Image: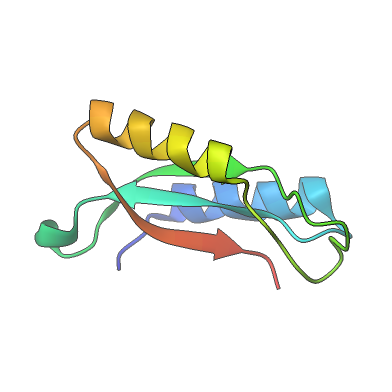
Length: 82
C-alpha cells in the first residue's frame, strides 16, 4: 500500500482531533494499481470504550462502500490510531 505525505498528515490530524480516543477511517483506492491510496475517509468510532478500541457501524461502512463504488474506488484498508 502506498500513501502520500498529505494523506498521512490527514490521518495524523484525525488522530490528534480525537485524542485520547481511538480514531478510525477508510482508505480508498484500487487493489490493481499497486495499492495507491486515492482517498482517506475518516469514520466515527462507535465503541463505548474508545480509548483503545474502535467499531465502525455497519451503516457507515455501507455508506462508504456506496461512495467508493460511485467514485469507482475500493475500500483497500482501514486505519486506526493505536
